[in-house]
Length: 125
Image 1 (cartoon, rainbow, N blue to C red):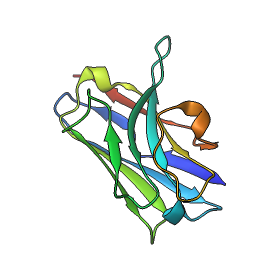
Image 2 (image 1 turned 120 degrees about the horizontal axis):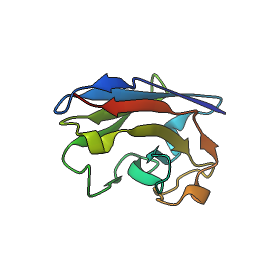
Image 3 (image 1 turned 90 degrees about the vertical axis):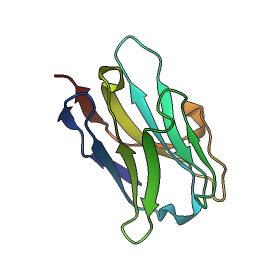
Image 4 (image 1 turned 180 degrees about the vertical axis):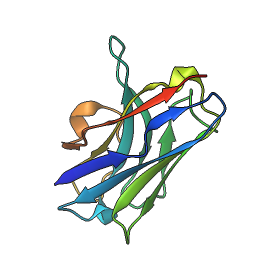
């Protein structure tokens, strides 16, 4: 199973980015997914997560109302639309996938078995 993130980059405050996470080796149809960000020296933050059937989602307080998680089953890809970005959103963003079918979303790292390599998001003027 391989997860490949893309879509990161440099954006000005107030701008938008859409991150993509292409999954291969397993269909995402039956599995919970999450987006996690990490800043060196700080704790990992679960930004957003989605349960296996996409009927339940989670957002960290700091991004709720600005970020949206979604998926495209035909593309086997998960997205994170990020709007109204601020410098505090600067981080490396990772997507993660559980290995158990029909799972609810989780917000602990040990619940996820597959991780991407990360994509850097920098918000700066």
